[in-house]
Length: 273
Image 1 (cartoon, rainbow, N blue to C red):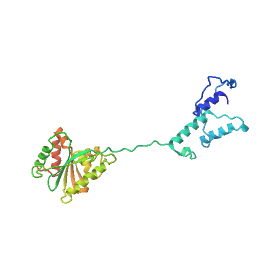
Image 2: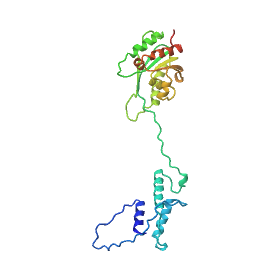
Image 3: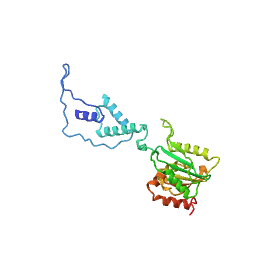
């Protein structure tokens, strides 16, 4: 192996090379190596049978054995060995396995639903009707006045709103505590079971996607909840039907939705003409 082959071999193997700049006092004089006139072909050679990493080890052992004479390892085999060995280390595949049958697939991260965060106002309007609104904390909007007018027009309740119960999630902002929608639905279901166990309701008015996602029987995305607006949905956990509306604050910001809300109440028998 001449100097050029040695440098190419060391570079392919990832070994840092150095060139001495000073001659030591007891060192032998350097000898200039004769380089070949034609450049060495560095094109990759076709893969042979067997593991490439083992072939490189055998080639190195043969070269170190003086009885077999000098042997030259092609640069293409060295580069291929380095690439395959790097892939084997990164994928954790056993070197004895067949490389062609071990596919390296990129890891796919699961899509996680963001943590739930809401504040609900709950009114027991009558013996058969429950109203829930996803309120905006600190918005200072007349949401209760609008809901009272809607119920008065529907001839529901006694004409005024009773005191509301407020549920906020997460309840305790502590590390390690679950904050997902599954835990939020469990908390809301436990609260409503205590309120509706003795006197269940048959109809729920759910204003806002957060109120519907917190009471629905199954996990639904925000887009799925928007598609169910102004529709009637069965809530099997409470044996009731729920009408899904935008939040009262959203209706106040967009008064044109009042007509659609009224038509939905008429269509499902909550309001009378």
